[in-house]
Amino acid sequence: MYILNYKGEIKLMTFKELNIIEPILKALETKEYLVPTPIQFESIPVLLQGKDILGSAQTGTGKTAAFAIPILQNLLAEKQREQSRRTIKALVLAPTRELAIQIYDNFREYGKNLNIRTSVIYGGVPQSKQVKILNQGVDILVATPGRLLDLIQQGKLTLSNVSYLVLDEADRMLDMGFVRDVKKIVAMVKKERQTMFFSATMPKTIMSLANEILHNPVRIQVSPEEETIDIIKQSVYFVDKKKKVKLLVSLLKNRDLKSVLVFSRTKHGANKIVHQLEESGIRANAIHGNKSQSARQKALALFKAKKVRVLVATDIAARGIDVDELSHVINFDLPEVPETYIHRIGRTGRAGLGGVAISFCSQDQADLLRDIQKHIKMKIDVEKNSVYSIELVNTFNKPKSQNSSKSNKSSNYSKQKKSYSRKRSKSNKVKPKNFSKYDNKNQSKS
Ligand code: AMP
Image 1 (cartoon, rainbow, N blue to C red):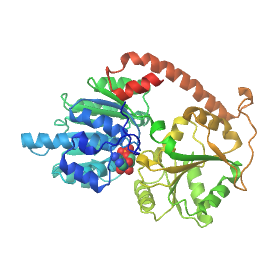
Image 2 (tube, rainbow, N blue to C red; image 1 turned 45 degrees about the horizontal axis):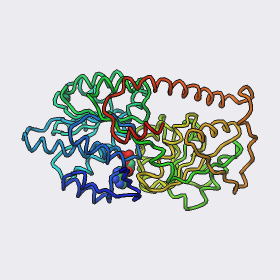
Image 3 (cartoon, rainbow, N blue to C red; image 1 turned 180 degrees about the vertical axis):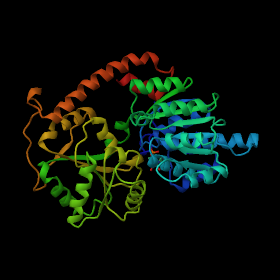
């Protein structure tokens, strides 16, 4: 069996062996990408052949390059064949501006030796600059759905020449209420096209959207557990709710925590943590939905430039944030949905780099921790080396009626999950026919 692993295990395969053209290989070399990640290894050959793809993968797996490289390469070949004028030929839809900008940056980096122009549009900023760039001619457009439709309605751009379509983080797009916008946009691009559909989760609604817009896709599945969990050092502190900030401050005294993303359940909580950290002399910024676009960009830029060590974020704001060499993720609050735990800790340990994920668990969150451990199929090490460490009363085996309101949420989740797996097995019937070897492997495992 193959399983070529970018961590250097088993057998290495290089990008060159994936038939990637020289100018793109050169750009990858500058980025010091030597070996394709599993999703790249799976997707690139399929996409270079022009097939549609349905990918279960999230940020951190290298999925952006997995679709960006073949689009750039196919588009270049097409341009050389047809010598056509510059029009938007590839469209990438992303749910948030942060993700849109990241995808745009990736296209620019991988395509830097090609005569292909990429641009990005998103809401929350004036449109004039974006329109000016569009007028100069663009080959690849990365966009959030709202601003895109807005500009189309104003007659500022057309999608009638788009023959490569990417839907990135489709589940997020649906969660954020973009489903109608997405369908409208899909109806505007060419019918004869290559479509790439990526989603971290594949519930029924996503599968039915995928079935509507994909044509006989190859299914690629990269399990985040396999990808990242085993290279991240995870631990948990049992701590009194009121002592969490003190614990955070004491951990941050260790300068090995170079670049730390702290997750807070609420926007208000995030602000409060930042305030308390600053009172203790630790520079920190918050990033969440109530912050203006420019404040979010600024906070992110300072964090990426390592000028601010700590970024406190809510799940929605942090989704898709791509910070190379993030050393630590701290779950100040445990997430209520176990999958979110994987999304969060996957921020560290990017594309094979090891990382550290520390969670704080107060008594009322004991059941959430149990659900997470069940989901990741491993026990997280308990750290007892802090003065703020406490022992938790074991509620795990108690009857449900004795649980807290939070744990009710978590048991709701278990119910949800059960019905989701039931739905999933039913939805096998409507799954696209072509499954990759990788997918079959995963299916037979389950
Ligand atoms: P993504 O899942 O596309 O957000 O990528 C996650 C991170 O991995 C980004 O920082 C990429 O720049 C990086 N990356 C993507 N592909 C590779 C690769 N083959 N080798 C090393 N790093 C990569």
